[in-house]
Amino acid sequence: MNGALPVLSLLAALAQAQVGGPERLRVLARDGPQAALIQEVRDHPDDVRDALRQLLALAAAAAVDSAASLPLAAADRLAAAYAVAWHDPFLGRQVSRFRRSPPADQRVKVMADSLRLAGNGALGRDGVAAAVRLWRESVWRAAAIGDTSAMAAALGNIGRGFYEESELDSAEAYWTRSADLAERISDFRTAGNAVGNLASVKKDRGDLRQAESLYVRAGAIRSRSGDARGLAADENNRGLTAQTLGDFAGARAISPVRGARSRQRWRPTGAPAGWSPKR
Image: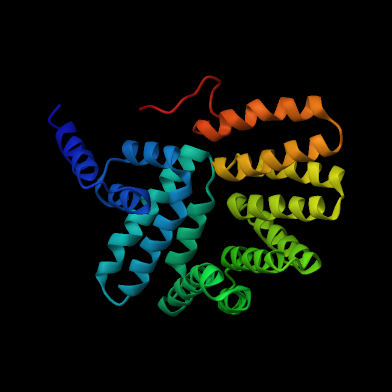
């Protein structure tokens, strides 16, 4: 019982301070028990990559002294929790790669990620051209250190920019490259985004059968990383595609599943039937 008191105190402090999202994951990865961290990762998979990115940025900033070991240890624990919760070792491989990299490459990795996020912010504020410039710089920096995951993510964002401008050929080219790179390294979150977006390109062109096939493929990928929101969007589009094709029974079959998935948390791939997250 006494061993449980620090855990309860930590969780109570997080709740009282209304700490959520990536920050909550960072705190649990640093100070919390692994069981609580695994549950948090299972319940909030969308926050994991942001939390991990922040921990790696802290490690890179502190790489000149022993302080880097603290955020790296937390990053290891977070990646291990993700591997248990979602049966996916990808983030663990990313942390190992970061740890093996020289400090200069670690800083380039952090810069590539920061440029990609800056592009996301610039898209709404300054427009597509400004965002694409930042995303291209992110790709260039990631390529310089051979960071395939960062390249795939930034290429996917460039595809988004072209899609915003209704330049479907260019969007398709960038999303295809993003999907190819991400699937090569089993980066399911980035691959699912790219394939789902490729499906939307096909839908916009009127190639509805191919769009439907790609939405199904994207869903299978997304389920492996807990991307419930992405899958809900894909299934919404898939239902609309089925209606356009005159497959009203198919659209009705998709609709209740889509609604349930938008309301419920994911059961990880490979988890037993009847699994539900603990409250």
